[in-house]
Length: 81
Image 1 (cartoon, rainbow, N blue to C red):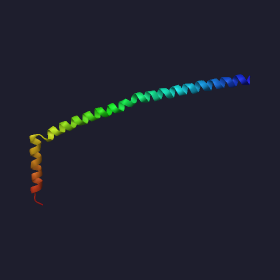
Image 2: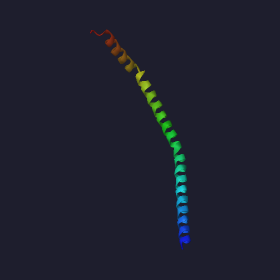
Image 3: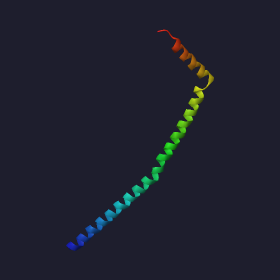
Image 4: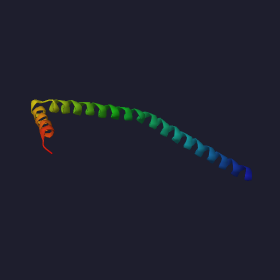
């Protein structure tokens, strides 16, 4: 009777171990599939940053903003202390 009980316990342990190993393989596989998402998120962020920089450049180089900045700098340089 003891031999049968030991065999059942060993069998359960093997199934449990096999299930845990399969789960771990699945987790690793899912992690590898999501690894590309980080790169694509960086790419989207970079595109958004470049777009924002382009809009900001257009605003700063516009005639109205340039004349305002020039007058501001001139007032600061010629101001009395």
